[in-house]
Image 1 (cartoon, one colour):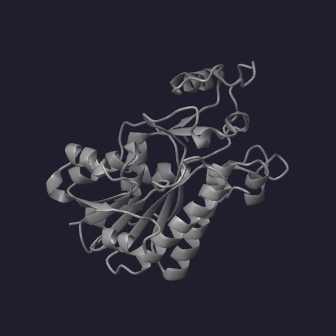
Image 2 (tube, rainbow, N blue to C red):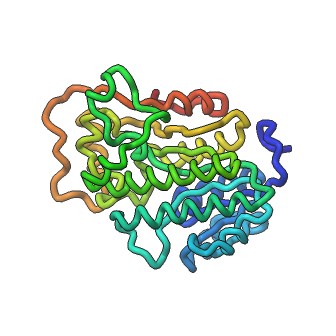
Image 3 (tube, rainbow, N blue to C red):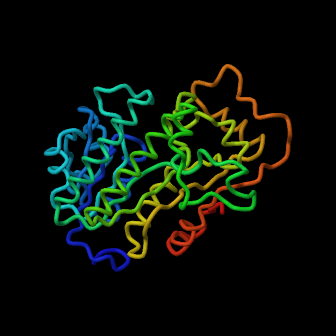
Length: 306
């Protein structure tokens, strides 16, 4: 029987973006819950590490090319759900620029089109970013007592103007996915993640572009890997999940928070970012209440910032 009364055609799911710490953690959790997992990887060699930490009996590894429709179809065949998170193709630079936005949009388009062709796919969990929500709003556009949430979208022109390429990529890719999902009748849910606190976190992480402004605007949020995994499984298993979900379990809104983050970056910046000398707590202007409502039914004892 499928979890939480979700009537699945099969207990087989696909994870695209399997090579990251988040991807492998998600796969392990899904295997522990009894699912058969199709792990779609882009980089040859990653399957060795993946197979070494997972249950080989219920794990199938597929080589993925986001620009090869047939490789996407092969990974999806027989699956009831896709967990999709974008990884830059192996033959492209991992540096986020305006060109990367085009790549990420094309990838999202190809994946959603492929999902529309697979009869067994019942749900798509699309990993996006909080940066697709937070950019381009100022005090003239909304009052200080109104939080940014899933209803908001980052302003594309603002992102281009200030060269916020990561935010631009995530915003355009998610909008592309939603457009196709609605047009093709795909049941999709997006999870808009804060800064992921994984072992690869470093000063070059593209999410950190504009960190000072995020901090000052009260929208600088982060999420632990385990919490992000919990969120993905939760919105998959809950038949009532819908739309977008802002996902974070910590807000960086004090000087101590900012210093702690700077100390975790590897390599360390030559001088920690300057966030000002005021010791006040920055007012939080972002809300994850929607996700909190759905996760509180599943998770006990884990703190969720709201």
